[in-house]
Length: 268
Length: 258
Image 1: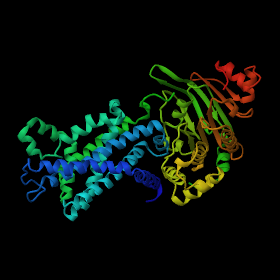
Image 2: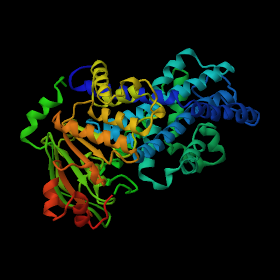
Image 3: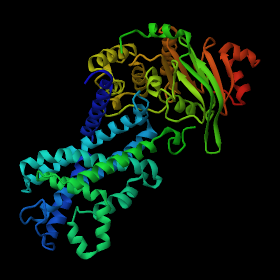
């Protein structure tokens, strides 16, 4: 890297490093973030395995237990929570100051927002791998190639969910607190997706819900991760995730336009 | 970025103001926060921006730092238009925000390195400048301490050191002494006056405390979003027919002195 792009690389590294250091200092948050998917995996899935029969669908080549089925959805859930939490902390930062330090540095705003977003994605990926490791220790093993192939998938789904969070938290006032985000974003997105049940199963019970799931970008994040964990690429999921990310990101950069002011108007 | 000292950078820029603000206006909905505000800030000069709370100082700072975009008027930093050439205009700008902006869990050095990276500095250059600025603020010994363990005065000093890391031509500070005890306040006021007088920096210092501004400083008095007078402090005082700045401030703004 040289010349005019060097400052961009340095800034990106600086922002990621800061997020990493902050992450190290927030071990409690890390543990909390781990407990959530583990409860789903060991309590919910264990109870549910008897109730739900899964047939063989791609990418699986054999009958799988329910725990195996929901691991990709739970990995995506980690990223969903992270993306929302990160964007809320950006709103908080914006009022409080550290976002001002970021936004007043001499680089384009879209790049600064993307860098901050990448920092959050980086943290969510570390959590996702920690979760996969715990699952592995309890016998939920993916092919080795899957652990590598899932990395780019996690980058993309993380960016998609993080930019959605950025867009929501900067435009929808009611979503400023986490309860609002939980009720109106995280739960609907998580439940109306292929995270907990395969779409064909959902279709059996409700065609309307099936269509909702089909329009939910989170479904494609889950499927991208699911296929990647078995070393496969789901092109539809890839296309939807990338397109959603670009759409959310453009809208979020627009939402951060200074002409629209800092929300709250508490600057005077 | 080369290693020019602040003095020589400022000399080059002596011909033009470090900050020029012309016809600036901003409103929060129907509430006019700034109305046709014009002034400039020259290199080597400490310029006080004096106004009671709610005068529009913080809005003005948000506009100068591009956190808000003006409804009317323009801003130039070191000759670069902030709206047209944001990056070039923000590069020579050093900012001390009113609210604390350091990461409490990070060390002083980590905070400063983060800032240096945002300004595109390579690690070795950043570390040299961090050493230099912390030395100047007598904070070098605390470089590896977490910000959380520092008192308010020391945190402010770190923020001033940070604002100078990239050798800015213009340093702006928004009520930087709020919440500090008297000796710390005096030390910081002195230090920043020194930055203007000895290092040739252009300084814009917003405050509502009249004792932070000296007779020879340039002064802008802001009241209800308008510049009610500006010039050398002593001249503003005599124009107002007052015996000191406190009385002049009272006459110009109708507020009791702080």
